[in-house]
Image (tube, rainbow, N blue to C red; front, side, top):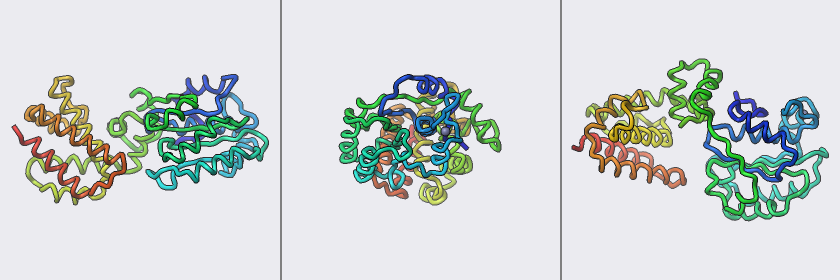
Length: 330
Ligand SMILES: [Zn+2]
């Protein structure tokens, strides 16, 4: 798995530029797409900042500080995240941060706070953090990580040094995935990377969710639906194990393919496993109907991203009914 004290290979240039600086900001905001390696970068930077004898631009992994950190018991390192994934970071957590910052470093070195994902802070939490950002403490570093920095208070963004961390190009990503997922074929690695929107760590997470098998099942189901071999509600039941998030991603991706095919921006669907279906649909679907469908889909995706309560069964039945109508309408 990913070594949490090394930046990803595609971030090495940024890493070298950062650790060779003579002066460090007291607060950093690491931004970039999900699954591109921001957390690995920030964790590695925390390790490097805290190491007693960093060598070759890396934490040594041997000093007292490194050993404490590896054991998860370094008193001068604080990690803040939502109590549950997808939930807010509350003001209590930020109060803990404020107390931590006020203390003297117990090991006599630097103190570091990792905060991820920063956009999960609710309003009160963000306001509480602002005070700490306004009054920096010596030898204390705040490392904020965010996929969606636009959702942070501008006053928070402006008090941090923003460090963008992008995803690698496809070639670099595939080279890395070949090492991470030796049991997958090159074709599977390519498909996983595509499903992950080019973010390699997300591709690995998808593999761990068994996304390839789920995908086969969904593609097969969509084909059967369009051939009238199965009803929408029955298909929804078959997809019980498929996260809605994945379905939304895939339908959105197929829709993009349809748009590009219609506009002749590409000759074949980028989703090879749906190429025939999408090619057929692209010839039949009315452009306006396609745009309406895309709007409908994106609106529901936003609702889902905002943690709105979607009734899974009702939503998916509606989605499949809309998709089928789209394919049949002339
Ligand atoms: Zn060390």
